[in-house]
Length: 317
Ligand code: NAD
Ligand code: UDP
Image (cartoon, rainbow, N blue to C red; front, side):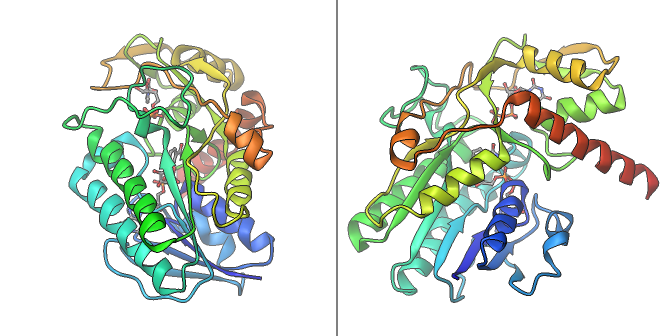
């Protein structure tokens, strides 16, 4: 049994990770400032004596005693990270420094970084492999997140080089599932909520851009396997589902699965929106013996049920 810190533990991915770690018998300390995360996400965990929650902004130093750290604290939806872009960069850069310093102070405990496919920017090679250096506009509206995460990776690798800190850098591709917020702003939650409300489905651009969507349980399995690797396995490793679809196909799938009468409407494409994205997961297969198992149909079914429940509750209260 370990004491494990999850920063951003009240968010979408963090809440699933906390639950999984508790299931495995660990003590979990969830640290969150509730910028995009919610107490509802961790409500079912609060009665577990092995679960603790600390309201804290990781841009401030943190002194706690743990055996392992997962660093997930950062807004992830373009809407939210662009809403407070300066804080996004500060969270990813200063937040990472605080987490890395903590890991060193604790005697060089393993520290996992939730990095992102956005480090590849609008990729010029397809699918994306880990040794691709990326194509990021450093002064565009996505840069606070993309460059923040890139600088965080630099810091993680420098702490490994300079202090021999055992780091685990995962590059996460688009992931979806229960515990996304109604107002998350990312495409899967937007489309499902719009479909369930019978509202128009908002396609940005012509919908020909692609993404590859991973169900959350598959991703969390990848996190656990990566943390369990030897101290010298630093990553980066891509974690995502290579099943690529266009945004228009995603909208049509969600309409068919919900039986919605929603129309598709086109809105303008946000600046620097990546045209295509698909992970090459050869490395994850070899190093972690990991492949995603949940089909988009099964994952969307679970996610649609979740949002049906949430919408029902929000109309009752
Ligand atoms: P999320 O927005 O649901 O969760 C992020 C959590 O971090 C929230 O609970 C938020 O309140 C917290 N947080 C933000 N700033 C903080 C700060 N300064 N101090 C403390 N807590 C703070 O997003 P998510 O989808 O769960 O993403 C989790 C992590 O995974 C993020 O680092 C994100 O960049 C990364 N990631 C996610 C995806 C994805 O598809 N879900 C893809 C790539 C990378
Ligand atoms: N998108 C869309 N409609 C929405 C939200 C997003 O068409 O209501 C598009 C967005 O422009 C992007 C893709 O869906 O091309 C994925 O967007 P998301 O915000 O989920 O994540 P990203 O991969 O861009 O970070």
